Length: 441
Image (cartoon, rainbow, N blue to C red; front, side):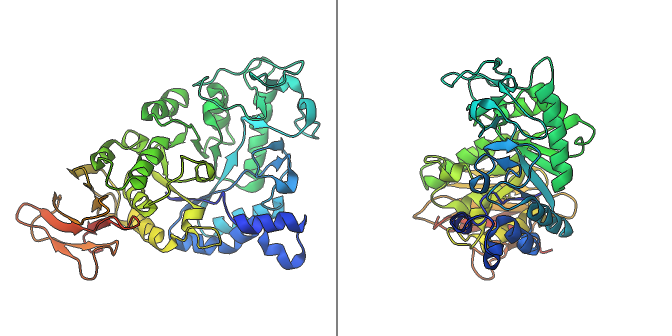
């Protein structure tokens, strides 16, 4: 699986849409993000993506100016800057027509918008008894104690903090019913769980295991760089029902990219949750959150990060702004598309470290199914190319082709008597310093 995180689409155009008013003039209708997604669905599929992540779809407090994280109404799809519900449903349908899965962004942790915590919506209304008091915030009469969560000290109270672990189960049952409705209305195949660290584990498991949602794919935004904390949430708290965004992978690979030549490359052997739970880790390099947060962005050599991610274990998720050539995007589409092809057709199966030094690293994927596996070499030295010899599983005199294009024209190699290859890995110039060798397909 390879996911395209669409939670950035049309940044500049959406700003223009906000200025133009709501609804947009007919001549500017294609400025809506949902409409652009619908139109671009064949391109996403052709690039190699098998799934897409949408932004939150439920009505936000800011209405046409909302990014969806200020949820106001669980049962209203008109009311975000991305377009109305009909547009969203059409976009999901277009992606489904291309054989892609579509995941929604599920906001359960907080709500925002109504004064005094009175959400007088037609369905699933709420009052202060539906929310927990939080330190430093106004405590309204009726507020309840915060839910028990996997990491009480690690959360971020935003807006009105939803409380699910209450005797009347009003919020518990109501949120499950609303999630079923959202999945059915939009046609979602699963969900990203926003701020999973702050959500009551028993409630989350009940939501995911309910009959109408038990076949959906869920992955949580458990914001933690400790792989054992992430694995604990996946295994202990979620009973392996959900995957997790691999924040340790993101921050460790980001440190390598941002500090060319100054990080021991051998640490790639234990880079994240993906090395502990390869089938439960959703690896990523950037998101709509980290891209705008100082100290969390990858600001240089990002293509090296994508070459690592797309050849390592885990389910990779690509950030739209990195991939796209739209205005204000980073335009890495061509190289990422090649990496997606390598991920799908070559980089599968067990992972074996073959070489680990300060500036260079190499690993082999041993193959699975029709994917023959590959040998991947990385050089993080910004000043010098490095020639290294790497063991492979192939017998002597096996011809291996280089699939990134970084080695230049006709860069095939042959294994020696011991099944090793010797290759010169280019110096790190804007992250274009990886080589991937595999048999001809």
